[in-house]
Length: 65
Ligand code: FES
Image (tube, rainbow, N blue to C red; front, side, top):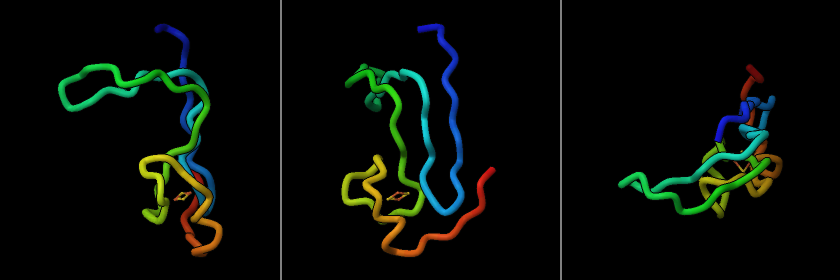
């Protein structure tokens, strides 16, 4: 995997990953490869570590980077 992956910290929202990354377990084994997804940074997702949109309903506030 050599394509560049980008990570965007969204205002009042998630961390958007653009590109394909390997998700690994604690031993470094690849669980799955995932493309273009959002990680939760508000702590309210019912599907952590993925964003499920809950940040909108909870009024999460944080600046973009
Ligand atoms: S950032 Fe979207 S649910 Fe937490």
